[in-house]
Amino acid sequence: MKLTWIDVRSLKSAKKAVIEEAVHQRIDGVVSSSLSDLKGLPPTVKKVFLPQGKELPAEFGPADVVILSDRQGDAGELAKAHPTVEFGRFVEIVDADTLEDACVASREEKWALLLFRDPTKIPLEIVLAAAAKADGSIITVAADVEEATIIFGVLEHGSDGVMMAPKTVGDATALKAAAEAQPAELQLTELEVVRTEHIGMGERACVDTCSHFREDEGILVGSHSKGMILCVSETHPLPYMPTRPFRVNAGAIMSYTISGENDRTNYLSELQAGSKVLAVDVKGQTRVVTVGRVKIESRPLISIDAVAPDGRSANLILQDDWHVRVLGPGGTVLNSTELKPGDKVLGYLPTADRHVGYAIDEFCIEK
Image 1 (cartoon, rainbow, N blue to C red):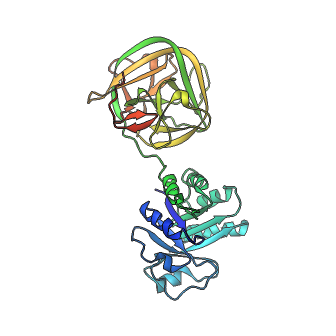
Image 2: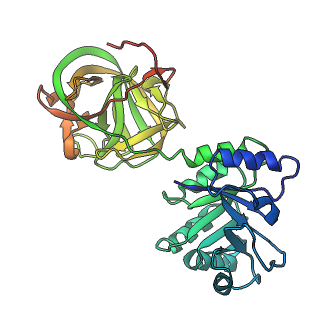
Image 3: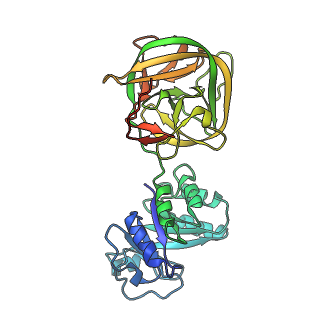
């Protein structure tokens, strides 16, 4: 889980309300240059004292963490004098020298709070690479929630957390939602194929993403919201065409897939450039990928029915062609036209029905 700190130093009338919101939303840390702002906060919130440009007080009162700027003392010596307080370093990156300071702080300090003045994320990439094996935490200053989302994903792993100065009530909630947007693992189920049928012509969608799929990875697709099968990407060699590791030949256009937004589903026909879908591997590990293009074309179709050990079922309608594939247990690649009763495929069986893509507990029959 990514860490979220809110910086209340610039707030005035809304400060109390924003802090109350942060506590309610389980924001990880509240940052202030005033120790009085940190008094009374519950132990679930890390109380961060940032006395930027000010003389250090003799005692740090309620503070759990003190972030030091240049020439504000030695963190090691201060830690000996204040054993209950953790110390870190603030670095503002404006050139090559301060970038090196940031790399050193990220490798050596318990907390490295970094402010990058240039809009490019290349300096952050350099710091993350330099501190890849360090034990401390890197907190990067974000101007808003949109930038925070980008920071969370730099070099795939992203910064350990962000600090953002909320402008109004609601910003802390949005920041926490962005931090929790990292998708969780899914519990995949082995399904047994019970029937296949050539059903004639229809429109199918190829989902071309902006990411390189792994060989054991694809997207979940199904005719019904409560049963999906794992369709593999075109990462594996084909006899008559080059591999396209960014593509999943996903299925008929009315099929469901899982988007990258709060476990919501989308029809394949709804996807377009910029949409988010959930990439899933055979272990159920997930990541959000961005759609670059969707190709919808008329092709012959094949219908596949499969059931789980508990009797729940899934249906998938695919292009009726040998090179269109799904994944089985252990990452086995199965050609759709060669599937037969008894074969095992990997699937996902959500328990909730769907209304405009959102999970909902209501009466619904899909067949």
